[in-house]
Amino acid sequence: MESARLVAGLTRMVRDVGLAEELAQDALVAALERWPESGVPDNPGAWLMAAAKHRAIDELRRGKRLEQKHEELGHALAAEREAGAPELEAALDDPVGDDLLRLVFIACHPVLSTEARIALTLRLLGGLTTEEIARAFLAAEPTVAQRIVRAKRTLAEARVPFEVPRGAEFASRLSSVLQVIYLVFNEGYTATAGEDWMRPALCEDALRLGRILAGLVPGEPEVHGLVALMELQASRSRARLGPSGEPILLLDQDRARWDHVLIRRGLAALARAERLGGLGPYGLQAAIAACHARARTAAETEWVRIAALYDALAQLSPSPIVELNRAVAVAMAFGPAAGLELVDALRTEPALKAYHLLPAVRGDLLARLGRLDEARAELERAATLTRNARERDLLLGRAARCGGGAREAGGAAD
Image (cartoon, rainbow, N blue to C red; front, top):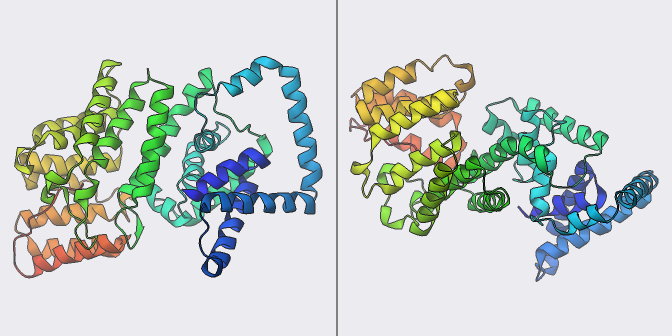
């Protein structure tokens, strides 16, 4: 997230997202070179920003960009003078005051496609690699890389201002902003790659941005729905990891370790969303998370209600991922055979071809039906598809238990 803060601050300075990202990366490289010898400074963020600004000045001095930027700044100043005091007062009265949020809205500008908005924001805000974004989108890595390059070029050519939009334009960009924030949260909640199953900093920053948005647009039910969803899911964070960092699935978690402050906040946000006009896709997912939060034990979970909520979600926002989650809920409510029938219908879905949770869920259901050889093969296949080391170990462990003849307990995805 420090990289995102650098990019946001530098974008305000140079008015070019692509150049800002290059400068931020240069500063981070400089830190990696110097800090091992000189020690980490008292304020690493300030050091990085100062280094990046010096490099920005050098860059502007070196090339034709100085002349271009002088011209751009001249136009901007002239425009501000023509706009007069009201615009200046509006800027001073900015209720957000957050460069990161401005950066999100720039990346979600309508000059970009929806896919490009999400990919660029995940790169700039979440600091995700192209590979991680490709995994999040179930898309090819070269496609995502090209999408990001074209997005930055488009923003530069369009000279998109570094500001949070207002009025109708704000509303039109809100949906993709919510989508991006939740994708960032999801990457923190279950990392697509690496040695750690979770990246808590991403969850915290996504939550912070969601809360800021909720304060900015208190009458938008889906904003509160998203905040509720993130609060409720984040409440389980401490219980999701064992002593060695190993994943612990939902039904096996020690619910005494759930954060009840976050649960109360999530339930309150969900109630606000309901009062404001019903539940959209995020609100429905929050309602599902609330069912888990209210259950004192795993056995008390209202799986029939969860399955019904997934039915509503599939109607409102259909996707193969929703269908897979619905199959899990149906299996828990009505038995593994009912869930397996839904999962098998998804096996030819192109978007899930390389998605590791499809064979993982299928393996769980097969194990619950006593078809252990098939279950082991599916769990091993899922292990080959995931890029996360912790998740791979978990899947291989479950596959090994199938091979040993023990009945696989199964586990609802968390």
